[in-house]
Length: 224
Ligand SMILES: [Mg+2]
Image 1 (spheres, rainbow, N blue to C red):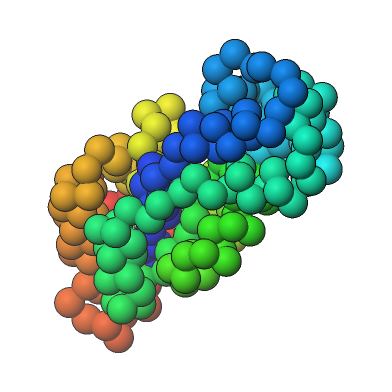
Image 2 (cartoon, rainbow, N blue to C red):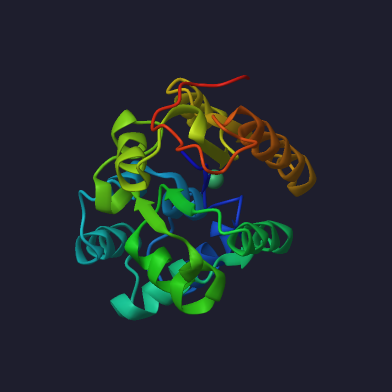
């Protein structure tokens, strides 16, 4: 099968900083929450939201209860979401893959407030073939269920998938399924790992020198 490339979102395609949201929320809250940025960006509460266990309304009411936030849900959502900035070299890398007609996917632990904001604000986000989002799937990376969802959606398995993520537990879970992976550290390193993958994959394809030869599905893992 032709390869697909899977991108994590946070710290791969967009940077984020929950302290921006924490400052705005704290300014309109009646109760002090220690390390509010961690409460917003790294708490069990956020994990429940991103696992699809809480609706946006339920998440907001838990935030309200903890902070005494005086604004509306929409005001909160605005503060909570406006923490992202695109990582230009990675957005450009993705655009290059689109030009080469290589299918691309987003595989992200995220929530509907963030996704609505990113979709509205950053045009590149609409350019993927598919989106595997934790709050829709009901599972977060590195849970196998979310990786299986990508395999079903893309129709690919194992070495036909190249996966980029900045968290080692997430890439390890992909590698354990036979996916080719890059632990994202810098755009330069990821770009060269991706190039190596694409050229190795092209060489390993049955009938690589002869396009008339049908490509077998599940062609094994090829050379690695
Ligand atoms: Mg990430």
